[in-house]
Amino acid sequence: PNYTGRSLLNLPASLDRWLGLEPGPHAPLDLPGLNSLASGAQQVVVCLVDALPFARFNAWLHDPGAALQPYLPDALLAPLTSVVPSTTSAALTTVWTGRSPAEHGVLGYELLLREYGMVVNMITLAPAAFEAQRGLLERAGVRAPSLLPVSTLGTQLARGGVEAHAFIGNA
Image 1 (cartoon, rainbow, N blue to C red):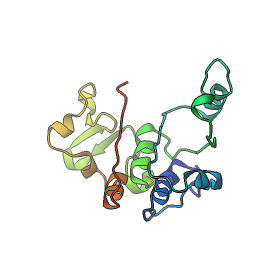
Image 2: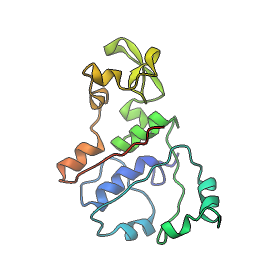
Image 3: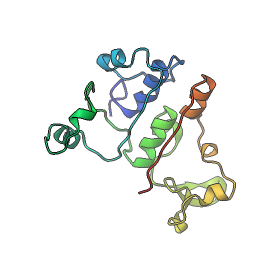
Image 4: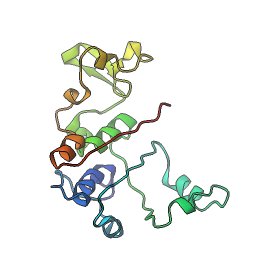
């Protein structure tokens, strides 16, 4: 991963910058064209598609049959690297905290949470043995942010008076 400006790790600092907030501990994205495009933004929409390779997206963008081009007239297309480990749970937690997996501690899909005495699926937030029952930890009173040793981007944005909303598809 390129943590010096071309990684998912750098996205939260850029969001902070574009929305007039103090950036987090890591460098913002190193994409000058994107900074000028986002200059003066009052709203930022991040559409994150998990496991979509840059080459595939680029091919779809230039495929006349896909018809994506009209929806992205002023888009700046640039690849970003993921994080290590490049699992969904580690990467998405990085985007939501602005911290690397080594800092936020979500290193894999399933983790042993000693304080709860169980192995937990970090995507469904359920004990690994009850994977199909999403959200069991929350129903038991465990709030997801309490599982992290660092604050979230949502907390940072709220402190700066910025509303954040997350829309997650049910796949």
